[in-house]
Image (cartoon, rainbow, N blue to C red):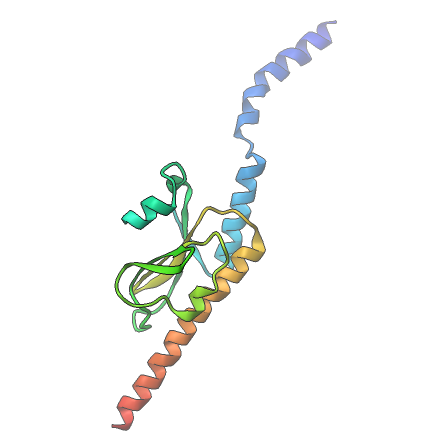
Length: 162
């Protein structure tokens, strides 16, 4: 009898430690973010760009659950700078007046906000989906940077010929 009392007391003492174990959802997010790092992407908890179109397409309750996945690139890579939102009519420029690079038009559904700065390009994601969505998105980002780098190399070669 005393043995069972001791076991019960030990279990009650150890029960709060179970809150420190990651949940299934937390393990899934950690796996996705680890895969992103292996694919060369970085992850930031960043707010969505502020724009009235975002207010009309993304409910206020959902806006806090978006995470930014980005790919760093050289400052020399000339990607258009801006932010874009996927709408039922296609991609809409939130900032800037250039079109979204062709490689990024093929981003999977659910990756509906794209942002590009002089040093990086990336997308906002609610982290729904799995590794395949992430791999396809990383491939699109790398393809956009590669095509911008190719254009840069061609323009440098043309300027050296002059």
